[in-house]
Image (cartoon, rainbow, N blue to C red; front, side, top):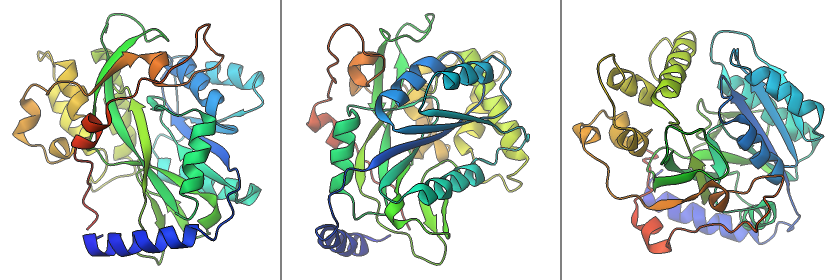
Amino acid sequence: MGATRRTLEGFWLRAKTAFIPRNMPRLHCVGMVRNEIDILDIWLDHLEAIFDDILIYDHLSTDGTRERLQARASRSSKLTVRSFDEPGLRKAQLMSAALLERRAQGTNGWVFFLDADEFIHGQDAAALRRNLIRHRGAKSVEFRWINAYVTALTMPLSRNSQLRGWHSDAPPKVAVNLRHVTDRSHIQQGNHRLIIEGEKRHLAPRAGWLLHIPVRSIAQLRRKIDNGLNATRLVDTEGAYSLHWRYMEGRLSPGRQPFIPALVYHYGSKAQLRQERSCEQPPPPETMEGRLTHLILVAPPVSEPVYFSAVPAQAAMAVSMSVSTE
């Protein structure tokens, strides 16, 4: 999408929004997990603190993730768990089907598609709803990653974990406005955008950040890449998907000791997708740091007030977030 078209569509979107009722939207979340036991409870606590309903597909987990999901669902009115036992990673098809399923339940709402290492940064449910009301005329909105790592990598992730990270230029994740979903709507592999068959690519305004914690240990990252690539290869014969995993696969070969902050900084970035030599360089200073419960909302509430640790606006806006839409 060129700059001129973006500008014109932005004007049209703002004009159209003024005539749409400011109804309070429902918040839906759909996700797919595999072997995420180390982060699962904190992630579910976060989702339950924000979303009205949550649908999670378990894809062949063997580390207790499936059993833990089922146990959590048995005592939660918000959480539904489904098993997906085909070996191929058909994430786009599942997310697209879930989107249409939610549209059939009502059109006043937004659907988020989150992985187990992604968290809404700096917004509780009320703030997120107000934010989305401002974008009620849009078909979808974008959330960008803050790629983060736990400073004490030898310790399990917890509410008190200290994190550092960077605002990333990786392809955004999408949230979809059910008001505009049709039978021709589907989700791109990776949950990066909404595609409507027969229509040109639409403008998706930026609506916030996702705290992204992709690397909790080298062993966990190796398992993630192995499982992800093996499942992707069954459905992606042309090698078009999971380019960041393919790149990191070579960096995690036996005998190499990768530098975790560098892996996190470049995770999914434009430079990594293009396999540039700059990915071998040390990362710049972090643009975000803080305790986990100061960066995201979790439930049940912690004993002390939760304050979101906002990154200075200048630091956030200084990072180029543009992604080619041509």
